[in-house]
Amino acid sequence: MNDLMSSIFSFAFYYPLFMAYVWMIGAIYYRFHWEHAAGKSYLEPPELKSYPGVSILLPCFNEGELARETIERLFQQTYPNFEVIAVNDGSTDNTREVLDELSEEFENLRVIHLESNQGKAMAMNMAAMLSKYEYLVGIDGDAILEPHAVHWLVSHFINDGGTRVGAVTGNPRVRNRSTLLGKIQVGEFSSIIGLIKRAQRIYGRIFTVSGVVSAFRKSALHRIGYWTTDMITEDIDVSWRMQLNHWEVRYEPNALCWILMPETFSGLWRQRLRWAQGGMEVFKRYFKQLFKWRSRRMWIVAAEYITSAVWSYVVAAIFVLWLLGLVINIPEPFHIGTIIPGWNGVMLAMTCLMQFAVSLAIDSPYDKGLGKYYYWMIWYPLAYWLINVITVIVGVPKALLREEGIRATWKSPDRGIRDE
Image (cartoon, rainbow, N blue to C red; front, side, top):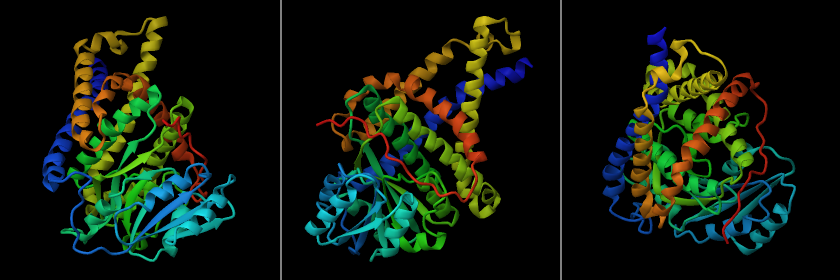
């Protein structure tokens, strides 16, 4: 029993330690193998062999306050040949009126109005069906795309080695940074999300494209049936189906997109619960396909995901044992203090800080002044590890018990407090 408990506690403490070094090593390799090899900043996109037309898909739900800024910035793209298709998905605010006004101002803007909320996946499907071009770029209705972003995304399809590329995910950057949660998320998108995507690109498969900014080959989407309308996270779902269909998904850090993130605990909870539930829904649906030899390149990403979910339950159990130990005497095999050496916490803290430093150094060319947020990352384990563990505990059973075939609609998210 002592050996078993020791193994469980060791897993709880050493798994995040191990993954932190895997992500750091993978990201550093990616940085010098691909990012450094490009030899240019995000302001200097590479020359393309050709410049085919691109359709930018913009699903909107209650984006009346933000749609104008998003669309006006879209038409500042330096890419020479594109159209914008905005889908008003049954909004209850003034999104319809704003989009109609903008369609009069911009010749290459087409607007579609859906009478009721059909969900983001349906909005994307409608826009894709009506698009004129083979290459699609999807962004959220409240996001701001950097002027060269489309150019960087399309480069993966056009230049060398792009014939098997089905999708390219961009680099979301947090736009609102006025609260503690906002500042922590700035570091999170570098030290966790950006680092993981770089490392997974080395594995050969990426867990998910960023729903807020991604590009797709329409013929690849057609082969897999476009976006699934009954999955709560359509971005994770389309990523898995595309890669299980043997299309390559890439990460492009130079394709910057400025996004609004929740800056309240209630908004953060809803977002992370959706992510946790959506990830398990996708794993549940496509688990059997992973047993095929042709799906072997997905094994590492799938193993990383399911191990992380198990780790969350183990950490929750340890926390419960700690609480019980405060009020009752726990038998020695279950006593945390006798199994976990004190230096473990110090090692994890030092590794965490090292991970933040590496990620901020890699991402600093894309986000000037990023280093000043390093201080705020000391709060990351408390604010985010805790909420992520709890959302996994709640989200996994919700995903396993959720009935398939029910349309996944969306609600207006918490967009935080914007800096003016």
